[in-house]
Length: 406
Image 1: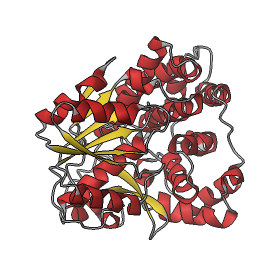
Image 2: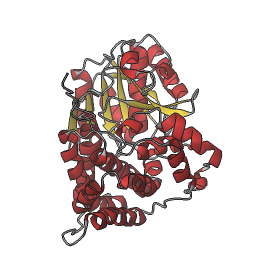
Image 3: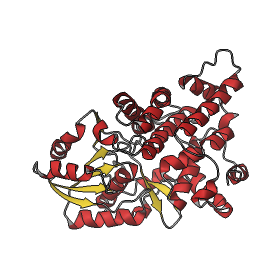
């Protein structure tokens, strides 16, 4: 019989995370009540970290409640949302008889809102059951749960996670001390609202860290083992936009051009690119572990492991790194492939330095040598990040690699 195998991944599926509408523009947040009513909401649960000092939650609450939609506020979300926070939010959702969610904030608020909806759609099933991992298998696990039909409007206040529109909800699972993705179908928000008026309210360090998260989505998708052309093209464009605009935006959020471009880049790489089949790898794999164990901001966790993590991958796809150097503005015409590939790392190191993000020295976050095997084995190897990473998983090599970062 003829062997019909062509290569490892002959079929690439795009859009398997779902993709709602995206509204981007100055003043877009003022349409939030209209979106709630269009989705049939009578009472919305506003899910947020609180955003203290910005007045944003009060503004959104007022817009919604004065236009005929009742509200209840759940502000018990913390950075890197926890399973118990989701269940507390579900309790408020149920007791207040809400029929929709409005998440206000960054990835933590949006992911918690998605997970609350997943729980509510499945009769209060604990969110710890909704774990996407390669060992379940998750495609079979997903079939056990009812699809989420509760609407969500995500009002974005950061520029990097893409969580405002993706279908996965990253939640810290206490029982395994790791971050997992909720696997219930239909969790993508109905609409994401990206308003530069709100997003420019970020302090400089949060703007830098969330913006780098968008950059991470772009470069990890670009070198991923599975590369849908839809997401590859968007990733290249996002790399260029972030390289040209993130510095300016982080230190002058009133620069409206830089603000708009970082928002577009975030949406391209995170919200749309990942929904169209883009993948992430070891940077998210180890970064998620830092976030789950020590509460490190997701964007910062990804940033501090970028250089060693991608040096680990460089030999597998040096041409891709060379192409990304070009996207960042490097003139590579007189360079060899490896010189051009190395130039990407030089540019990223410069970007990190300009953003005041220190790499290495991971023990400053509380990382202990004995925790590294747990992160590599439980977080990365059982997560889809191990499938997307261009270099094959090698436990001993990865443990040794990250031990050098202490």
